[in-house]
Structures are given as C-alpha cells and as structure tokens.
Length: 166
Picture 1 (cartoon, rainbow, N blue to C red):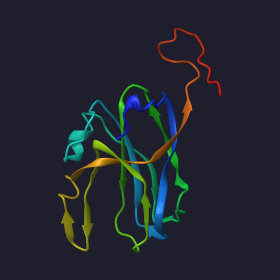
Picture 2 (tube, rainbow, N blue to C red):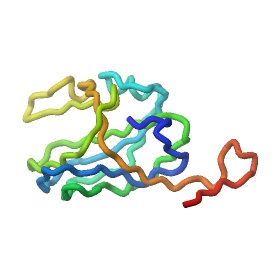
Picture 3 (cartoon, helix red, strand yellow):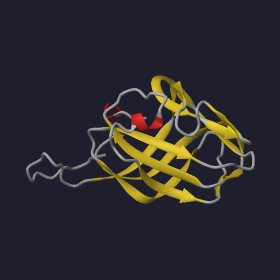
Picture 4 (cartoon, one colour):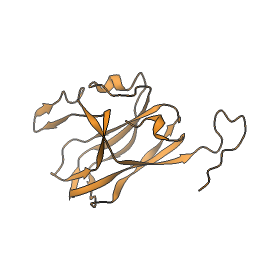
C-alpha cells in the first residue's frame, strides 16, 4: 500500500519499480499480473477484498511467463500495459500475483511500516495464509518507485495550470 501522504501526485501511473537487494536469481514467473486500486484505508487487513474498500482493482500488467532479471542495488520494474488513473487523494493498493515459477527470485529492500503489506501463496498444492482470499499482514514496505504522468490541470485549480519545476 502506498499512502497519499507519501507525496504521490495525481496522474496516470505507467510504471512500478522495486530496489533490488543483494540476493537475486533470474527466473520466469507464470501468469504474472499487477492490479492497482484506490482505497481510503491506511492499514491493510488480512482479507484482500476488504482492502479494496468498495473499489474495483484494475489489471495494469500481464505476462505469461514474465522473466525477471533484477540486478542487486538497482531499480527493476515493469511498464504497465494500461496506465492507472490515480486521483492523487486516495491511498493506492498494488497487487502482484503469479501462478508458479521456476524458482527465480528478486529480493528487495524494505522498511518497517505498520500494515502496509499482505501476502499469501501456494506451494505445490498447499495454500499458505488463506491463499487466494486471505493473507498474512506484515509490517514492512518495499522500497518502490512509481512513474506518473501528471495532469496538466488539477481538478480544483479552476483553470489554473499546474507546473512542475526541477
């Protein structure tokens, strides 16, 4: 989960990235898909559907299989197939799902944050933590980077043009 207070501006989210840690092993992830959803919640619960807060998640990326070859201490990520129109005021849920892999992995750096990450999985035929409907809430947040194409005019600007300066 990314909070609106994390200084994320409104606009079309077009890419999502993570910062890789030391250990990496290239691999293929079957039916890899990403979904994004607005929510008013500030901490996640263990039931995925409840975290949507009445909203519908939008699939923004799908590959079968998807090859992940992360390099330690560098950003790696994915350009979305479909941009997600972020409103700039809600919190964002970002879901990553896949169905099996060839034992590749991409570990990322993380920071301690209360209720910002939920996961579950299936190994062989055994589901863990209530997969696919429920998960385990973990108190950390991956180092992430989001690419957003901002709106030129804000919805409350009454016609004034917003400008971004560097």
